[in-house]
Length: 384
Ligand SMILES: C[S@@+](CC[C@H](N)C(=O)[O-])C[C@H]1O[C@@H](n2cnc3c(N)ncnc32)[C@H](O)[C@@H]1O
Ligand code: SF4
Image (cartoon, rainbow, N blue to C red; front, side):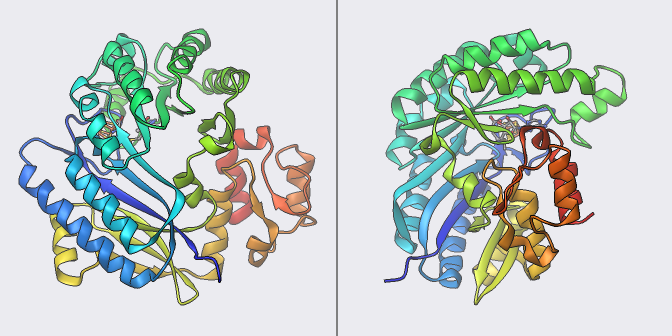
């Protein structure tokens, strides 16, 4: 019997209790949108069914509820989506079902119902563990709530990941080291430390333009990055990806590995992206950002995406370089032969000599130094 092709499912839930001043994800304030949210859950289920008809049989390796704030979803609808996805495709024995949660007391009270719905990995958006930092980040929870939520989650879910944000104004490597150690003490198997990115058009972007605060300079940011690697590595968290650290291979996010290994995934919900190989051609799908448009699209055509584009072999290879090199394992040279990249290619040799690529005849993979300048490195390799 031939093995089924692996598939991930991404479900986007755009609603949040409050919009954070740094966030540029596809998000909306939840208040007053209860009727729309109920209609959106129905459209998501219709979309899953329609996309399953396109993909045919696959091995379902992961479902990821991302946002926005999917911990605000009705757990009954989460259960329904998990159950339907399990029936539409063949679930892997170790199917990962992740959900992004905000750590308010009100949400922690619902973790039990979300675990019963089939969620087996919680990705908790702690962001920080001190009240001054949380206030600066405009969060709707304090550090005590964050700790409580992490403790409840560690009891209820087999797997727990914590998101943290660093490079806050005035943060020293010592402050950040203390924050990381406090997070490690909460017992998660996976930690995602993100450097604060100032996204164009956000409230933080406007505040910086007005001179309200300044982000750390390049040198301090590099020191904070080094502190992250050192502290997490010392406690057994391997940096298997640029911003993702796991205690051992089984603690890695299977869903993110779907992206970074170039496997297929169905994207449902407003603004969701997908990658589907259909009749030997890889396609990218993209849904409309606004829930109303997405719901209308699903009602009109069954599938929720509003665009589907066949990718050329060149596009696929460029994407493999850009996403695949984020992970420690890198990519096989055979996957990107169309770009002319090989172990002997002058560009590759040059980056090996500069200490940015590992000298490996099978795989294109970055060294620790290469990962510090990854965006420039992958652009040079894929396009430049
Ligand atoms: C899609 S968000 C959703 C998570 C959840 N709603 C929350 O806020 O806790 C996923 C993660 O992205 C990170 N993030 C979002 N915007 C960021 C930014 N501008 N800079 C750095 N990290 C960011 C946060 O750590 C957040 O937990
Ligand atoms: S950071 Fe999370 S809670 Fe805040 S607006 Fe973005 S998705 Fe919503």
